[in-house]
Image 1 (tube, rainbow, N blue to C red):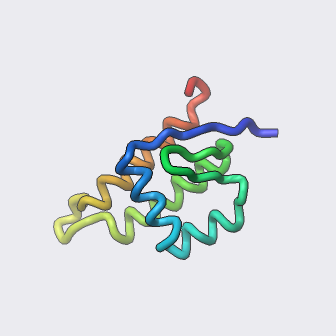
Image 2 (cartoon, one colour):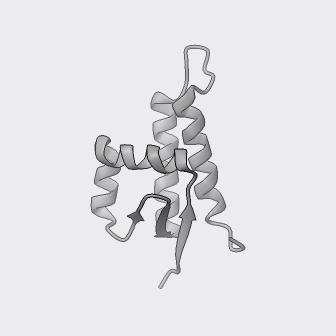
Length: 95
C-alpha cells in the first residue's frame, strides 16, 4: 500500500484550489474518480500516484489558461506553477 502524504498549501493556493474544486469539471471528475484525495482548507492528503495526477491536471490547465498574449505567465499561471512545484516537492522521499 502506498503511503499517504499531506501537501501543505499557502492561503492563496488553498483558496484557488477550493474554487477550482467547485468550478472546474475536469478537477471535479478527478476528485470523483479518486475519492482518496482529500482537499481541506490548508492541505491535500493523497498518495504519490495521486500527486502526479494532480500535477498533470495543473500542467494541462496552465497550458490552457495560464499565459498572456506574449506567452508570459498571467496571475493564474503563476499560481498554477506554484502548485506544480508544491506537488512535485511532495513526491520527494525526504518530504
